[in-house]
Length: 75
Image 1: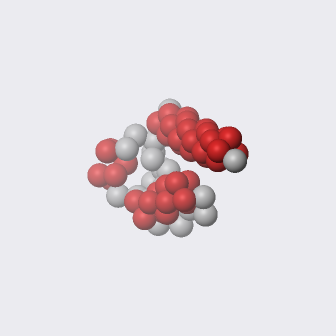
Image 2 (image 1 turned 120 degrees about the horizontal axis):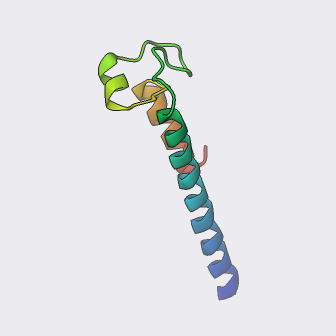
């Protein structure tokens, strides 16, 4: 029985690592391109301060928080 739980835990950890790696890759890709002036999710204007602070940003703060929440929680 313990083996099943160990394998499940290992798989969960691997999936979490894969998701984090994908997020890091996506951020690196976004930094390689210019920051968007409008959020690619909601269309709202991205403030200049955010565009300067996060090179290659493509989403507003609120949409980015929602995307990260979904990434972590799997929604």
